[in-house]
Image (tube, rainbow, N blue to C red; front, side, top):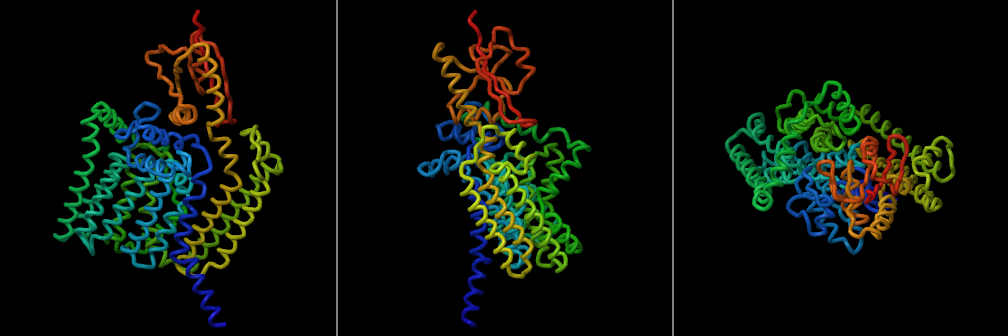
Length: 551
């Protein structure tokens, strides 16, 4: 009996220990990464430069469908293109490219866990990993083509370097310098401001970094960060100086944009509130517990990092969801420092809230699937049919069986979860991972049908081919096309539109999307030859292909 108990205890430690955590992170990152097309929005938009690189174009400066894209430097795109090329025998290019997101999130989780251990001790390591991957706002972006995930990982690397400074000043400073340089290569001046700014701040404010040895090492790390950061702009200047000027203008406009309006501050607070759940309640507890020692490195480092991100959001006036990703490493560290000291009542309350809220979301996922497969509940079924009238559920029986297996596994894992200081974060991370897996199995086909442009582009390709049969080589001009549509046209049909300059174009074909004003102002000689409508309500999209009559 004792041997059986010891065997069971060993198995439990493996399931809920380091091996189990690695399996959980792998499941979280890989499920939903493949099996669907590039989706409307950032997923398709930022696949565009990777597609160009795979075609041999834009390796130095990102290009989208033949046009420069100055949003971010190429670190994420390089990684995505390399992984897409390596996995080309197994995965479609867009699926291989998304592996870059898994790599960068995994790095962010790993560096956050190690930083938590250095700052707060061994009991904070597992919570650091669980809280990083458990942030509610991360789950969708972790499974799309998203360059800001590279910035997230590099901020986590930079914080890891700073956390090592008290024990190993030179190694920690150089690691932070490398992280800062890579943050610049991931997100430009934004990345540099969020990381390099920490060097002088830590030398001025942290007692652990003010002694001569640490200060000298940090100064060396800062020099490394700035010198390595200069390499990419220098290479662009030597080969394509006009693109460097374009990038500098875009960076200046981004950083010098209008401040976040007072009316938008509430929206920003709401965004951070749900995006960083369940981190921020534990962060508040951590700050309260450490209020008498906020000048210590363990609180000062992540606190300053979080404040820098918030300040940049206010200065840039941009509160898009993805822009909150850089705050997660700092929030995960602050929360990890408070988990071991959570009082039993607070930990149990967070545990039960996590369980109940995720269970409710799980029930909603099942209801959404039921609306697709059985037409119940009727109101939800009508909404599903209105948004995707041509959608047919591929294999509802298999979906149901896998969904039941996931639900039972979820219940079993939570039931057997051992009591520890990490129980609440573990409960949330396991539940969120299982919920994501359930949503992927039951709802992914419907989302792919409504967010992919594959069928739209196929229909357009047939129309363009028909027009080119009578007018060979006819180009297609465009007005009002979002970048994600341009990338989808390039990927699914190899079709690159020509931008209209000065209200004139030599092209005999014109593609218009959701631009009623433009379509009303088009000259009478343009005749509609193809239309395509998709979605409903605010998601409705209307495409028109027009031909200019020779007369």
